Image 1 (cartoon, rainbow, N blue to C red):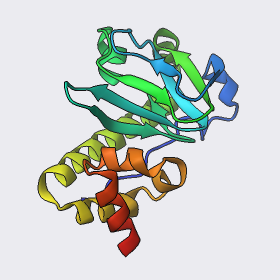
Image 2 (cartoon, rainbow, N blue to C red):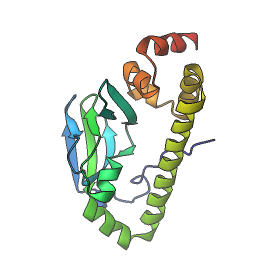
Image 3 (tube, rainbow, N blue to C red):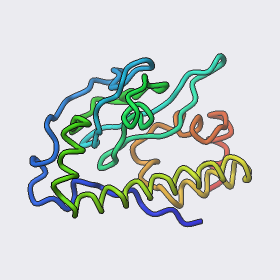
Image 4 (cartoon, helix red, strand yellow):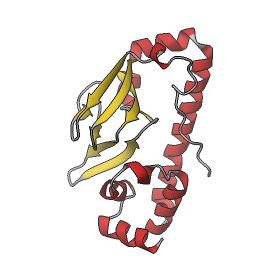
Length: 182
């Protein structure tokens, strides 16, 4: 399955300032969102990198990353208003653009072109999630590494290896061994 590239919703705007309401700087290790918070914002990473994860009884489970030009939030919390089950933490000093949920939906109502772009971005994200689930269920660690590297080479430019290893559900040692074979 070929997953479409993540779309930058802001890329096609004549003036990006018309959509986001705020630019914020997050220091390394700070949380943009923590478990239990209601996430009322949609974020676009301008600089830096983030991990999106939850904590099980035994360890941290990374489910996604944010890096320049990617959109992120705690989607269930954003869509439903329920407390987030996830954390979004900066891996280095980062800058994000953000728009409040209400402002975002108001903008969509007034801009059919942007609504189409948003729909395409959601389709791309759902496709990426299904592809990731398939990777984790059906392929070996080496194949997971190869598939993710082929789909998202930018991930390897922005995210430290130990976090990619966690995302791929392998130990850092296994990740290093596989990477050394390439």
